[in-house]
Length: 99
Image (cartoon, rainbow, N blue to C red; front, side, top):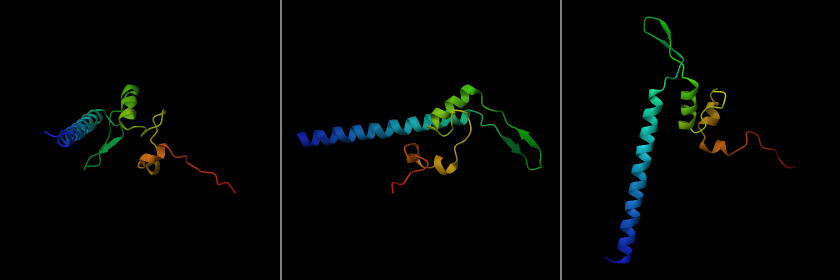
């Protein structure tokens, strides 16, 4: 087996392993997040309003870690305009122009 072929097989194997690990972590985090109560209300078809269980402070901490900053430290949701942009964590809200 030549050096090129062995390097190609090693690279392809590492890439496949990285993709599988990424998919497994994403799936596991999604399952953990779905088990935590989200709070809010549920309205049934006949109009009955039921309050849903609120997450505990520990569960909120886990949700914040899973969402990578999707909620601020006080537990309030970040505006959807900024939450949908993954680069927004690195960009300032307002920029000043140098005139």
